[in-house]
Image 1 (tube, helix red, strand yellow):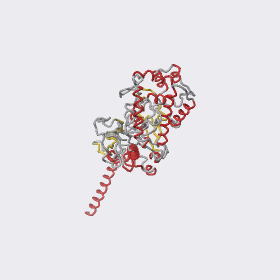
Image 2 (cartoon, rainbow, N blue to C red):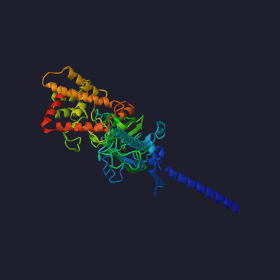
Image 3 (cartoon, rainbow, N blue to C red):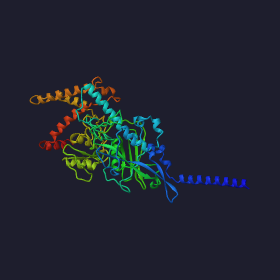
Image 4 (cartoon, helix red, strand yellow):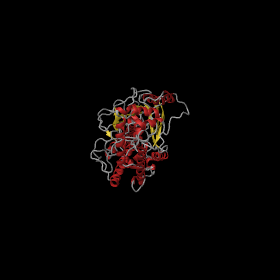
Length: 522
């Protein structure tokens, strides 16, 4: 009898244990979305994933953290989530730790290694942005070192010294429903005027003039006024739309456009009527569409090799306007925020569409025939001389951007036209200009002026010849493409000359003549 009782107790205990395990299993399985928040899916952000029991519902709720990304000034103290901790993505070890990205990721993993993390959208986002910062920073330091050792250029004290996501960035709209952003449409590829400074996609600025103590290899780019920042936001899987299967980063439409430009990605399609968006460049592809209950969602994928360094956009806050087709001119004497719905004058160019280009030409006094050429455009119409007209206007009156002491020259393309760097060689143009003067030399008083021009052209050609020689220009010898990498001294001198010209052109006594020359040229 006692034996039977013992057996019954054992069986009862086993049944109880099995029942407990079944209950626990059901409880753990009730943690919906937990498997989508593991490291295989979101990389290091999985460290912030946890489950909490929901009382009286007998289930577990999944909590996870996602980045809220925005582009701002380095001194900015308030983000979309208020005064919560703001992390500046500058490629330093400290920022990599906070964004759950390893240093090895940023140094450049092989394509095979990156394939292992195809599902890690948030990790790829941080890796690309951090890599952009670190590579461009280290390249700037190398250029500076070569400049100082070979040209004796020492950066003045106090002068600034000159640093992208990969798989899926999903973006919540700034309000519910379609058409949430009222900003202007972004445009085409980034460009750099020969010898000028600029380029967007893509991404950061300095928090202070101190170097990044966390990284022995990298200093922040001093003098920057634009950085990529993020804040952490905790979300629960209970609020995820049914069509979304993994966590996503959050940003606004405007910041998404700016981030894409900073990373060197160019819009191929931007249709807000159909919510169809596609951009490609620098080894990335971005595609966007409307997701019910979420807003416009973008997927971010890596499809090829990525280069930053000299392709990095000038880290100036002013590039934000250029991302939306607005370009300040030399006639805008003070920096001020411009909004797309405000009337514009000669202080700013609108180049985001044919109609806006026509309005800009009208402001600068072009005749009605030229204005209608753009306003009533049709297929096959020609819009340029050497360059497309918008680029010629930019070259004549556009304000140049530079971070003094750096070698970054790329800018976002603010026009609807394609920038082709093979269309014109300034060196060849100057040489041919000199040959033309020699062939048509005039007698009399003009001879003195033409001789001065020929002397200047000879000096410029000699300078080009010295820069194009690897012996005198070590940047050229180290360049994979064979293109000249201008030194900080050369670019600073160039921009000093441009500032002198701008001072003369904006003199009230000359302003009317400048506008006349522009209108007649167009």
